[in-house]
Length: 453
Image (cartoon, rainbow, N blue to C red):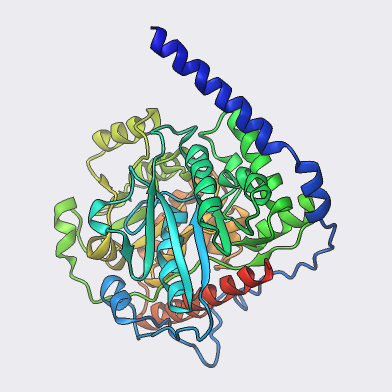
């Protein structure tokens, strides 16, 4: 008991010192970094006449052979090595990659190797409990450093980021790239330690249903300090850029999430393990968290009573909770609902390729990579009418009112009754590839890095 009491006392002293040190000098830093700059906002051009509009010269997504083998990309790209000293970049704020569930993790998995190919010396600080030992210390030119993080929904990200900032202060990278508004809470500390910081705002995490009052306001503070004290800011959607301009009077670089143009030549044999048949199931790929609104889709699927169709929910929960139990109970009540767990590689590619349609009923998104991926496979897609989904600009009949189960049911009937032509699928794939290309995203990210100097 004495040992435990001493441990708690030491932790409390550490926390008090950390808070004092972290926020000491914020006023002075704010004076030097906060700029009330007016931001001219330009809405994204979307489909013309409610349909896909193709550019005259579509550039296919291209990458090197190792990427092509892993993802089934069409084409090949070999990054041009830089003739100058490499830009030393350190990434922080994500669990790890490759093959780690999460939108930010998928974002980094695709972006990081391309940054290396364009001349960056990139080190990613990952959470030891998530990073697979088989990945090793390097992957596609990306260096990994594993740092401890507690197995706690509330403290995992912030404590790992704190350790990461201290590590970065020792290693002195040219750029510390922090992902998400939660880890961005440590931006002032990084600046006080003399680091140049770029923050990517991936979405309003404080709106996620899993957070309580205190956590929500901590995340709001993370957004406030991350946007105001960073040397440069990146946002992944125009909606987020407008929030940054309106709430913080700061300018941010708009760099969308991306997709790859996948090879559709993948067997449907992978489906048999889940009891699914080609073109006879509806797909949702996401983490199993409340803001993805799986229960809305399940309710609509149950009442739609689609003959011969199943519902495949791909993903897993970060931490076992009541929501996961609710989903498991729903699958027991209806054998046509399948929880596949987290999937990757050819299995995930097969699930996308052979689905009848994709549904995203979520209440919160930054810019959904799974939605972009579904479009890259040429799938018919319906999604909730939240701003991030509307920004992609699909046809009006591809959206439903958030939480409106009846509308979801109606659209399930409409889309499963229609067959999509190969030409329509090709146009969808070409459009999404031309607008959300990872190579272009990597080039814009490097420009954002240079703007931080």
